Image (cartoon, rainbow over all chains, first blue to last red; front, side):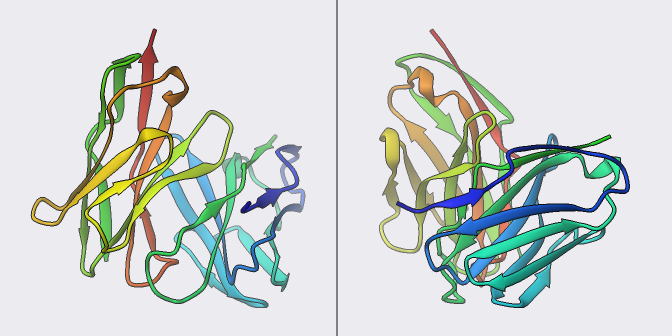
Length: 115
Length: 113
């Protein structure tokens, strides 16, 4: 069965802290994604990666960076957390054929609160 | 470019009655369309997808959707709602590349006993 695992489900961090959100997929997918989900704003793409060490900015990359050193792992980094980054973060992956129609598989989400 | 509009932000139905969730899309390409469901505090789960094969697509848990190109719609239906269908539903369109997704704002479904 397809599995995208976000190891931290609930985190509380202080303003200014460096935060790492980890995501692992076991499907040998090329593409991996980080979204944030906020009430009234829906899902917004932060970054995606189409290969190891490759990354592209999404719609809202400011304040975030990512790391993909291994194919199965994609990390989201908040260099200096701020209260406006309190949100639900969703990791996802998909097969990377480059064309449309590939199913995106989501993790369970990580709830981050910045105080 | 592509976009998605979910016409209802909230739908309330009685258990055992039909469910209809409406989705209109726009796309410069032949679109791929998806419906996802999100239960509280969970990630998104794929219900079904359309990728230019049969226009009537059957998914999990008794859901189905019909692609109508002339109406640019991809409405989701289920003949008989169950309490476990209470969740948020997202219509999603894929553009020319699989990483270019547009999400609808979501429809919250409430099921009354």
